[in-house]
Image (cartoon, helix red, strand yellow):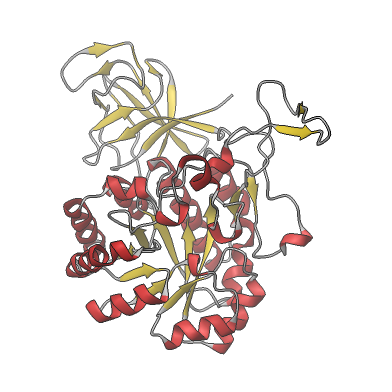
Length: 424
């Protein structure tokens, strides 16, 4: 029997533009934050208080939800600043706070009892006992540890049916248990659990052996000049398991990782999973269609993580060759919010056709004029420029990613569309 309750698609909002793109491409909710109390310092800096306020207003205007990340691990010296931060965020009236520790839960409930609490995956909930403790503390939703199995999620839901459960379905994975890694802190002083991980697990490393009798060190060559990626986890991708997840009727929210990823990533992940879930409920699930979209993204190879298989049952979660791989498509341009202009992200030349990918549910009409033409081929939309006209009036034969000038489109496209090409 199919689930009667459709879970939300929860997308990362690394900045205001990514927030808008995720929502336009199919996300039901987004998550993001301001300041180092959010577990992504870099994305936290891309939002300031006013732009985050604008993001909340935009989200609510769309009839969707936004959750504020306050899931760092604070020190005593930060508690007054944390209290002030919670007060400011509460005034914006988000739909929930995402927090990681019991103390911050109590503080948030004291300051803003009207804001629901979602427990971060950093709290590592794997079982009914821990879930029950946090539920009794007033937590509305638990974001389960990434190491949890679907069977255990179902057991928690059966024991605590009023507790909302959220799982990760896509994005970067940490090689350490639930992201509790200290390699970055050791090598560069950037502490992962305070939001400043340098992704040291993706670096190139070399193996050495040492003879204890004479102290001689010898390098074990993996690949000359490159080394090996001994810690590098593949990206999580649970697309093929969407039917099983939905049929369980235990999951309230499907979360996509990636606040520091590109705008294209924010759009395509929401788009692919939106199609997959919609098609499942309509009885026409075709994973190949959605997989093709996810394959266009830059990734480290894909793994289905631990939701279906226990870690000891399957050893394909590490990528030992590269820190990150190219996707099957290259993004050439991003279309502006008004739909009239585009900004170059990769080379575009006159006479070359680029595929158009647009937000979920949008349609594009074929046309042609002096600037170019929009046409249909194999049920896909393409754009070919006859000439490239910059916003300042200058005409070009080609444009490259270093050019920050917007250029005019032959006809308006749906806001936040992308132009892309297959990588040969």
